[in-house]
Image (cartoon, rainbow, N blue to C red):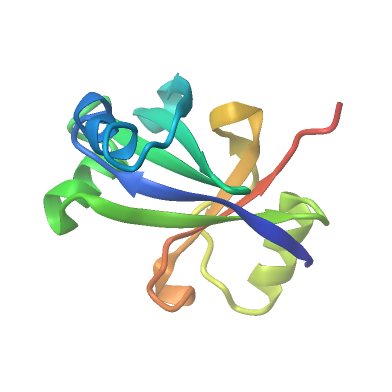
Length: 137
């Protein structure tokens, strides 16, 4: 598995609208994309800092993983996403063979059209980890 770069840092927020007051109004960053990912029960907003993206995650349902995260831990960093050059499927197979606990056993669709999969924090030094790849065109 080859990681080429940090794709984004996910930040759990109660309200994207309220959070953008800080990220845009105070830090001067620019939100370039807002979308809802229905199957993950989340609304996302993306901002760029250099080559790294920040993904603000607002739950769209009380039973969403992000809502549960906020309830348990409060707002803040939710996950770190890495771009894998070999592909998410191959990376999952390799990591599982090394004993890494998977949340997703196969890739699924994520925000910005990426193929994604999550690794369980119990296997990743307590950091929720997302693997990403651009889908084949």
